[in-house]
Image (cartoon, rainbow, N blue to C red; front, side):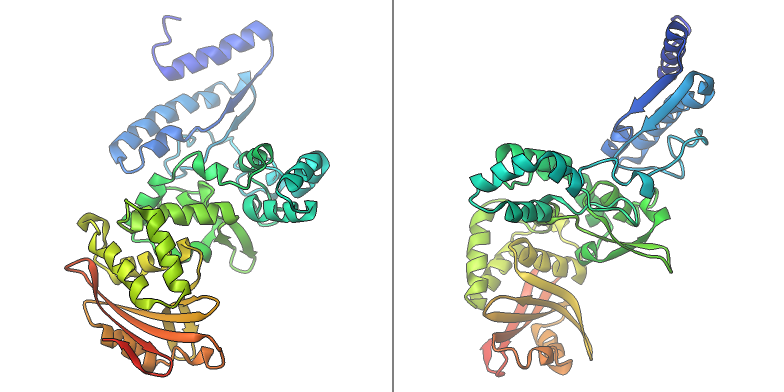
Length: 406
């Protein structure tokens, strides 16, 4: 129509025409309302332009209220304070509502009621029992919780692809890379260890307006973290990775951003894993030094946290049991890595010395908790240089105090 010169006026015209032609109020269903805003993260001017356009567009739903029976808007994320929906004060947010927690995804009961035959076929193909197949599917694709009392929810995209291909692959993660997440984390110097033990309030989880200082809402709303527990006293949600698919894939993706190994990563991983398993400290530390020596200047932060994150990420990415900031009676160890035969205690320093790092391990008696452990234990002091963006010095001592490297 001639008077419909803007997208909001055209949307208004569609609603009105549908109502007049059918005599029925219309239903509005919008998926991925936030796609333009997500694409513009990191570009404030463009995001503001998109927000203004979308706000005007969706604001039509308020002025045309008498023509609308029901409206349902979904998206990956939520922009609250200056939201595109700020004019729609009649909307109800069901993001953390227990009544709708099972709306998106597939529950264990639904799988057993409707897909049991497919699970049996997958089990037979992979030469495992049906119970073993259920258990592996659960570890790989279950674990999403969308409210404080939510049952576990399976990722439907991954689950159905797994049953179709009869393979336990990383399907959902492969469908899109979280580049914008990692860039936000790096920009905020986010401590990667918090990914497994993050606490947040409902207000924080429901808003992206703080992503300039806190990337957690973006990580949670994008599905890389989910609710793992709820503290009723303080009204906080404990967050963590939903399942193995997300954790393994996300760490693998982070590896590309927190290390410079853009070439030959598969070879690096193989050599690194074998060296750690065999107790070949000089070899795996040499590999680490190679990584940092090749680091691009702009990718490395100038703080100890960056190097600490990068090293712990490498160990986690290749599957080793890794703890950081482990508490002891006299302090906190920077990092402990355990294998079947070895225990490695790491202390990191920035612009100091490996001797100072090692001295802290000795002074704080970080090896004491493993006094009765039969595995061979190594204490490793590492100093990073903010000037060269690489490992400046390292020193290794066995539990029996004999020096291995100076």
